[in-house]
Length: 510
Image (tube, rainbow, N blue to C red):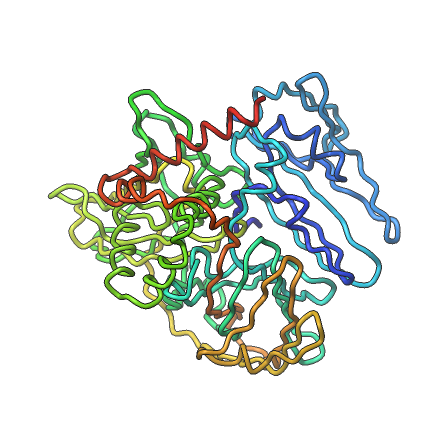
């Protein structure tokens, strides 16, 4: 089951390349890039068509440590493959929304298996954009008893100490082996990562329910989440098949120029509402989009030689930090307002945080629906183009069941140089485990928790805290007038993102 989505290109430099790794990832790239990518040892495993249909191809078969597969291929502007039922498939690339690839690389000394669907949208991708668009945070891998599996990507968007935050990620692949849980945290991006805390939560909840976290670490139970009955955008497009379940159909329009200059989508989701319901738990699987992730770097580099002064202001001046938070609330680049339709009109009743961009967690947002008449709940979102990748939405009206949360502190932590870093990660304080270079990693071990009592099911969460600093070019003249325009004029940053995307498209097509 696809619990998460991924929304940007995963490139060769992001694959873990230590001496003890063997990694597999899935990602999607724009069709024109496939010929280039296949020479790096990748193969196509699925296509998402513009109609919303998903075509799954034959999976690889194993012979010992060797992998053999009937690999789809691209030629003459078409995609070809042998399907699971052994029939031949062909489609023009003009009908293809995303091409999903798998990549395997590594050596014989160890195994890390990461299987992720990475969405790139409909970009004219060149090698430079593949290598430059990932701006993120640590990657966390869970040991499932046989291999490490890519399972979490915490505290995205926390680009300096003043933005340090807690993150709560489900570790669906984590298993206790020999009385311990093992995770590996890696730096696979051009940045320095500062991790303050790692702890595991074992959450026991009634069997038949799901346990899902909200932004603040509150644990909610879901009994019968209801998918939307209708989803339409302002142009009348029916998006139900794209947003009714977590799968390979991900709605992520890129930051392309549109008639009239619109830089936002306007989407209304309709859900059934039981009579008398006053509260609802909205369950969303969304992530920061490809271009939105890249724009973090673009907008920070506009500060040029003044970037360190800006970091110092965010880290030490609550007024400056609050101004940034209010701007993000207004612009919705990395925080999405949830409007609920009431007799008085559309009212903001919740906020949906961004995440990823490689992994999107299911998040619960409690909504007050006491003012909603009738048997239908309508929720509106207005994401800026290119900044959001939307996979699924649902609502659950059940009351939260009692859960038992058992926090587990780490018992050992060792970095890739063999140093003991446990003291840096065991508590939220002024000590940080730093990973300044691409390829840095640390192994972290926790004591296993005894099995849940009968009638209960366990879900594992990682509670982490930290921030990161992108490695930026800091020699440019600060673009003060442009930055001021972002703060002064609503949607000015989204307009700038559209302009920059157009420039990248033009450069990539040369």
